[in-house]
Each structure stands twice: as structure tokens, then as C-alpha cells.
Amino acid sequence: VQLQASGGGLVQAGGSLRLSCTVSGRTLSSYGVGWFRQAPGKERVFVGGFKRNSGSILYADSVKGRFTISRDNAKNTVYLQMNSLKSEDTAVYYCAASATLITSTIHSMHAYHYWGQGTEVTVSS
Image 1 (spheres, rainbow, N blue to C red):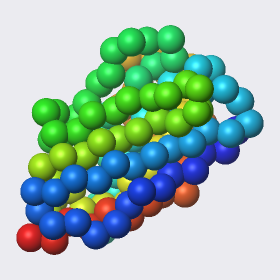
Image 2 (tube, rainbow, N blue to C red; image 1 turned 120 degrees about the vertical axis):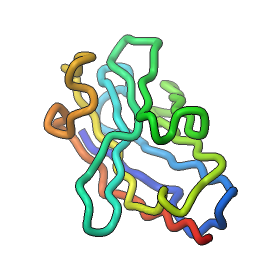
Image 3 (tube, rainbow, N blue to C red; image 1 turned 135 degrees about the horizontal axis):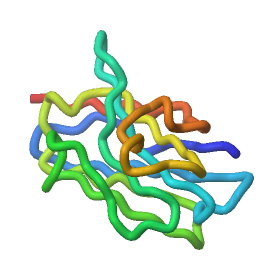
């Protein structure tokens, strides 16, 4: 399984970006997917994600109401729509996948078996 993240770039505070994560090698419906981000000098943290076969999506408190995750199984792609961006959203964003996510571990990067290469998002204030 391979994941390819894309869509990062430079945006002004208050603006929007949409990141994409394309899964290849297996069908997206076989996996739960999470988005993480890592700011310079900081740990990689959970942004949001969903378990396989689950209709519910979980978000970190810091992005609730601003970020939205969606998926297109036909395109094997997961999206992270980011609105009302703030300077503190500046980070490298990663998508990750696992076939065995459970609610109690979805926030942990150690629960994911496959990772994309990351795409950089810079929000200027």
C-alpha cells in the first residue's frame, strides 16, 4: 500500500487549502485513514481521521469546525479541506492508513502502518 499526499502550499491566514491523499495498491475502503501534522520542532500530532467502515470522523479540538475530512472511494482518495487557516496550522501534513484502527487508538501515530511522504503547509500572518 502506498499513500501520496499533495496539495500543500503557502496561504494567507484566513485562507483555505485542500489536501489530497491518494491510496494505491489496495482499495481505500479496506483502511481507516488519519491525517497528522508536524510543526517545526514539535511532535507529530493527530488532526483527524476515520476507521474502516465507519461513517464517523474524529477531529482534534484544534481543528474542529475549520477542517473537514472526506473520502472518495471511487478515486481511492481522502481529502482534508482546511478553512480559516491560522499561522499555527503551519506544518508538514501526513496521511496514514491502517486496516485495524479502533476508536481508542485512532489518535496515535503508532496505530498506523502506512504513511505518505507529507505535504508542507505554510500559513502567513
